[in-house]
Length: 137
Image (cartoon, rainbow, N blue to C red; front, side, top):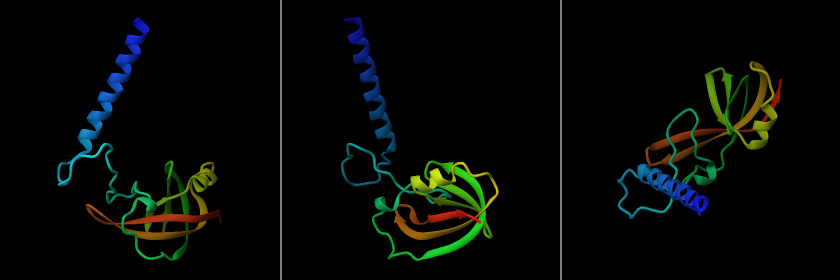
């Protein structure tokens, strides 16, 4: 009986924590009723967390841009940093590209192709650069 109460208390605490997190994410500015799950929004940062499929209004088919630079490293599971002519730049990557470059040394010369998508968000327009192919030079 004691073990069952402990599980119930743990589950209750987890549900309460999720409810608090959901409440904290609501900024109260939307005129609609709160939803059961908080929605993700992009922020204009070096590494936007919104994927193109989450974007309500992407621009028309983006063109691929070729570039070279030095691989700096993985920023997280879905973005890398590359030192380009414009300076250090964050790029979104697929899990396959992240796995490919994950073992590369810092300052590895690279040649890559990427696309730029402009996204309209609640806070303004954001550019997201996504690598479509990358190889060592």
